[in-house]
Length: 551
Image (cartoon, rainbow, N blue to C red; front, side, top):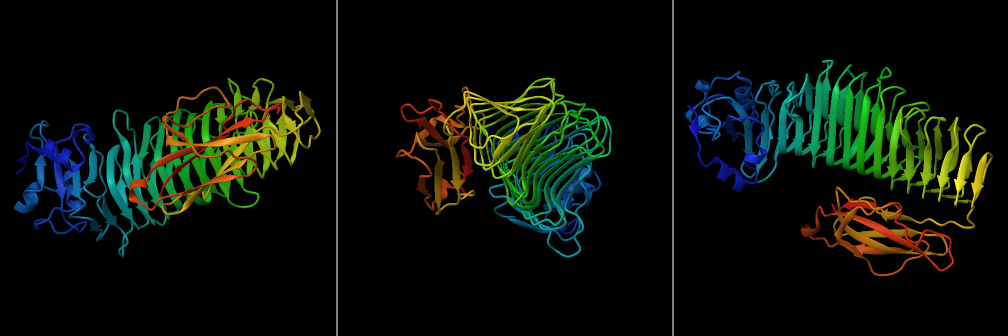
């Protein structure tokens, strides 16, 4: 029998998870208390696999012992249905679940399945012998919250048909550690459906591919959202595949990636022409190939990249490869820093493609478009770069700065610089209002990953005649941006100036207290740059800032 629990809502609130976090149309909740994944049906503990089988309707409640039945309660307000839609752990009493053998797949149901933990996250340990699978999810509505998945061939493998009207795969505060193949994979074989992956405050450590979202099927509506996620020690960070037809929305928000092969790849196998919206901000990538975002001649891509910091970790590596000549790509790249090769190519987009307040260094840089689509640069600085245009239309560079390296155009695509400094002008570069000296500054953060008990160093990189003041504040995930080059990405009411005035390559050192109170603080540092009297430079400029989270 199932026992009603009228006080479940109050109990959940005191435990840190409440009715607001329940999946749609819940019916019954199972309080999983077995430290073994399977245990024995009819013993004194309710196991995770038993909860999955109850959800799947492959285990009759009549087979459970009285002690197991006591772990199953009706959720108030959902009637007398015995359908199980929620399995919950108490992480303080069941901190680790040893996976004895492969868990049953979580099957697709109209009411979905929610697995969570309270007090502390519960770890599912897949490191034992004979484990061939992680969590198998051939379902369209599954949510996991406050869980740790350790070891095994993979963490979560979801196969979706269409999630229209359902949640898709939703992950909140889920950590995947040391999987051989991948942390999270969502895929489909169903044309003309809807697929969705939503991950928030998730961490993937030491795996082959951290997140794979594979929608290389015709006519799909594809939604992939990664919010405040961290990837460390993976071979590949984020892998997205799109097919032909349909539409896609890809949201990368407060994403940090350290990978040994590639950071972010949006690929179009077989020439997939799906229209795409790429909305992104606060993206930090360190990998031999930082990011590759493929576009298509048909099927428009609208890309917005703000406050990306990408470093190619090998000599000759690529920081960003975006688009190809003739592709239908438009949008904005703003306040980004790229260390390594950079390629931004378009020509078939319905609106302009613009780069503003970008910093590039140490790589070959290529810009190209066609006569039907403007491509422009503004308030951007290139250090030791080989800048070369291509395509069939001029590329305009206003208020830019080219220090060292080279800058050149072609006969069909001259580089037209206005009010800019070019140290080494090359062929087919046209200048109007050339400046006599560099006029833009930069900012760097060392180390790139800031930990408690160590020192964060904010370093200026300013030419003669400029000085700066460091500004530190709490990150604003949805900043209200002023006109360029004055984009502030911290909360104005929680932003403070740091002591001192800085020139050239001077730096400010901040010793981070080794106190848990500071753990997880999400901060953004800027450098407000001003000119000395009679120096030709913007009255005030904010080079691209740096977001960092104390670890």
